Picture 1 (cartoon, rainbow, N blue to C red):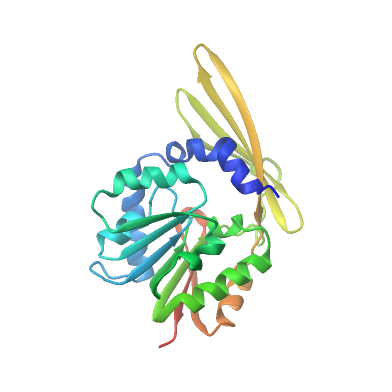
Picture 2 (cartoon, rainbow, N blue to C red):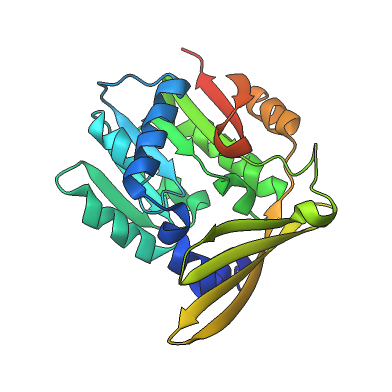
Length: 245
């Protein structure tokens, strides 16, 4: 069975993801500040898992703080980028579905992250619940799970607000259009790329889950975690869950 998210990354988004983010140094600096906001120490130790790690926006600052990091992503070229930036940092990359991360874990985790709207890439809420259970089982007592995601439930975009300019330069223009369905939002990415003297058009789409922040908090709390919700970067919701000692 094909995976629409993996297909979309392979066909379009993965190939321009780092360009879409822009200045990588600035991005990792923002991620480092986010680790401070989560409450992680600047000098730490332990095992950390970064789910949906991509090119290492959070994995790199985690490793610089002293964590042994396992970076998990289903799109291997982005993990290759991460490896090229990691140098001697203690980061192990795993090319796998994030739902299967436990199969690659050899020790309990001090920190588990799932940042940047990665959570909404899962196929259904049952998969989210299963992931949360695995996360809770993997954390050490006192361990931290942090997730950021977009709230496509409380305030859905309407009319022209569903059209978003993601990034542009002299050679590329990436826009997206959001199509709201009952349980998902279909994200249609429209990429114009200059090829010689002509513009070339590529289009691809994939579904994202419409997850209620209240549902996420309630589901994590039901696992015995202590949970707080707060504003995240770029208009996202951030939920932080601590495993009781």
